[in-house]
Length: 230
Image 1: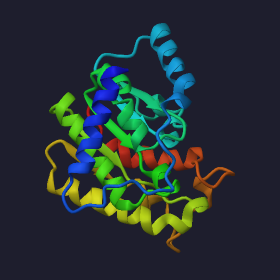
Image 2: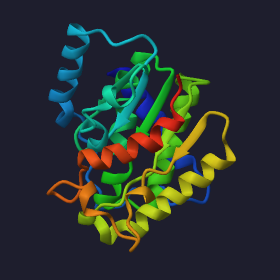
Image 3: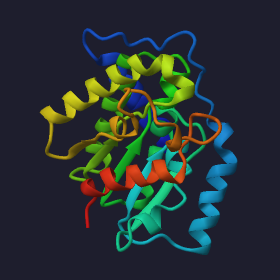
Image 4: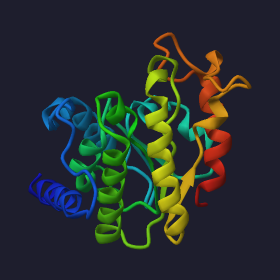
């Protein structure tokens, strides 16, 4: 865990060093609490002991929209996908566990979904963008030349009032990726979930109006598959 703490400090330093940006986290955002993920990390360790993951996997990482993608292997047959999504994680969690849940697997590609819960907890689009930059910097430092795919933050009926902030965070990240395409890719997993009226289509969401149905994951499979390595 010392390594994780060190790299979290690096990430925090990157946020503070960003010129001209609002770097202080919003006062309403809950503080980092790594202990809340103890059970999920133990479950990952048990999975690894029972069934060692394939060498150099395509690592799916992030919050519950990844964790609940239970058909990942069936959706991408022939590709060495590994799911390491956990709970309602936020970018600070993804940064904290970067060493343990990303670097440790030496992935050939990382597919990241974060920012949804950050905005839900009160983070600004600029804070989400700065967190993405911190994550990308860790990739460059610890996993150079490993491609990073960012999945756009999705619209959700239960968080529809926050969608303008989601759109702004997605825009900032999309434009940065477009300007730095060598090892970065942005996949639009947001607008395909919207209907002709511009609102989330109900068939893509379960009863909590936040997480997705199998139909929603089929949409994601179609758009994400185009960006995966063989």
